[in-house]
Length: 251
Image (tube, rainbow, N blue to C red; front, side):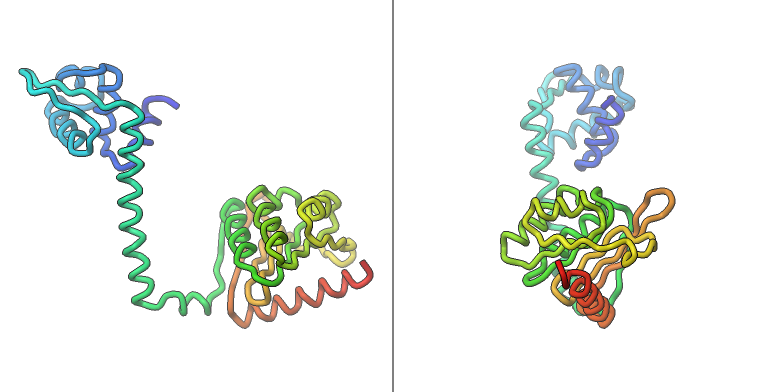
């Protein structure tokens, strides 16, 4: 990480550009005047005063009442904790408001009638993990690619097994089936003739009311469609359940 990256990171924690540059400059100096800060930071001296005052308000800078005024940054650990605490406080306030809005306008009911799209493998894995974690009775997880059984998915499947949920992993790939056995899930081998090449990356069913199906593109990206408590989810869950029962009949 270079200085520009550090400034960007501080901005993501809530500082303005001038505040971040001033704070970095003060860390270099240990303590300094507005003129000294301006010499090593890309901040006009006239703007250093305001930035330092705001940093003082955040508890990140101490001000020495001298002539000229000198500024000293607090320690790194103290600054880290203050910024994290402020970020958590602001985040909590924002999400509390969003929850109140969601409750007021009844968006949960609206979502239950939708089919949603998720783009990007990390986002698809996160959604698949949440679906698995939400299951109370049964999970079916199908994939031909062991990389679609990343750490978060494996942990969610293992937790479901431990919680007494009936977890079935279906695949024609031995490495996928080995992972299933390692976590205590039911491993069902599917012959290639039953798995036509359709570009499907993973299929997830949670209980009988939530499903996710993802497909891959030539560039390696992944896009998923998922739904819960809809006619689409119920129908696809039923078909998937019948398919698993058929291929697992003699295993």
